[in-house]
Length: 133
Image 1 (cartoon, rainbow, N blue to C red):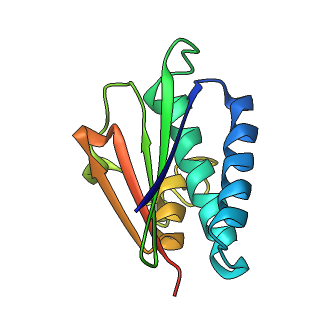
Image 2: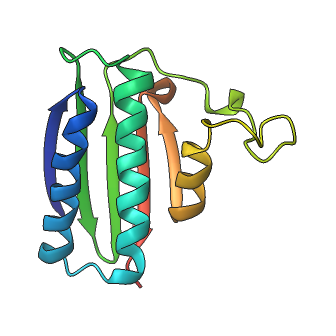
């Protein structure tokens, strides 16, 4: 298993660092274009949620990203230093009362673009899995 880790202060402009991290992983682990886009959208959305909702844009709090590559699976673990959330309490963005709202679609997208999503430690840690085959 190969592991790469990075931590960033909770500033939304640091998403660029995460994009570079994913670009480097694409080259290092020969990630094909078919899943590259799904990874980029899912991981950056998850990091954005961690910065904004988890750490409340507190630049003194960090967001941690870890990539584990094992066999044909890429696992991205994103962890913030906030209080967490209950993933079962999220509103359905496809429900008629939510369809016009501008936010609330991030986790919906992540769940549809990732092969597997797990929320741990009361929602402070998210693990996104992508299969390379």
